[in-house]
Image 1 (cartoon, rainbow, N blue to C red):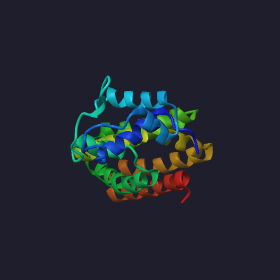
Image 2 (image 1 turned 180 degrees about the vertical axis):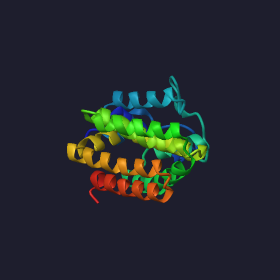
Image 3 (image 1 turned 120 degrees about the vertical axis):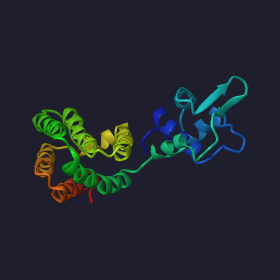
Length: 223
């Protein structure tokens, strides 16, 4: 089992807090107890708790302990916090629901300038020479399609998904699955999405996006 780092522990603690653990007395267990539970040194737990303190999740009082700053598990912040542990499989299922719809809306609603921005992201991604650059412009291609949808709520949902996918475990998974052959495949599939967008073919754009996401799912998850 890989050794947990402070960021991993902070995410786990925040998820437990959002699910209502320690809500009754509003106080977290002592750092020594958490260190024993996670099997790490106390200074690792201390760094994790400091992260929670920095984002306002908890407050520490010297000699008294660490206390939760909010106790409503149904709040927007608590809901978003629970999403931090979203599995790649769940994320891909939701992407396959939302992104084809976004592509369909974009084919109908986008301005010529917005479509040119999508084309620009595609061109730079295909010309990229390394994985981080490709990943950045690959993500930007999808982001710009959501922007073209002219649906602000859908766009903000995607912004949340994008934040979740930028976490370290996601990047490491994408890095492991990356290859030049797959990059070329993604670029070819992006081209089909772009062609449908430029042709104002909403059904074609939706179908091309779904095909692309199924390829991504196979490469990431092996299914």
